Length: 102
Image 1 (cartoon, rainbow, N blue to C red):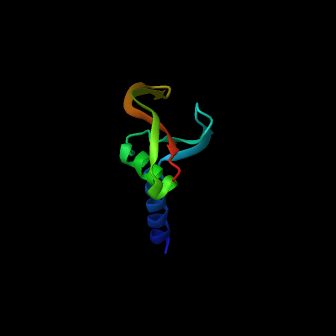
Image 2 (image 1 turned 90 degrees about the vertical axis):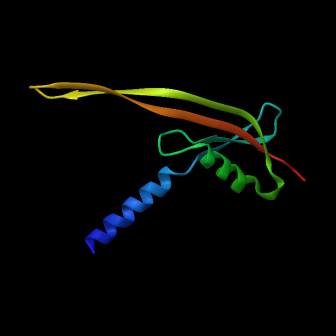
């Protein structure tokens, strides 16, 4: 039973990590827009495009802005006997979309 709960928890965490983050906002032209974030090593542009497809449906959408840059995340740690510092590279991806109106 315990291993089933752990397996379900891991599957749920992986599913959430694969989704784009969506926030409602207003575009520069005053229309309702959506800010999509699909940053991280476990996400890709396909996550942003899938979220835009789900939000706008068959009407489609226009991409107002798109940003993609590499980011280095630094970490440091240690104890009384040793010290460790490292850096990890990830991607910062976001786009702003407006749903088309028929």
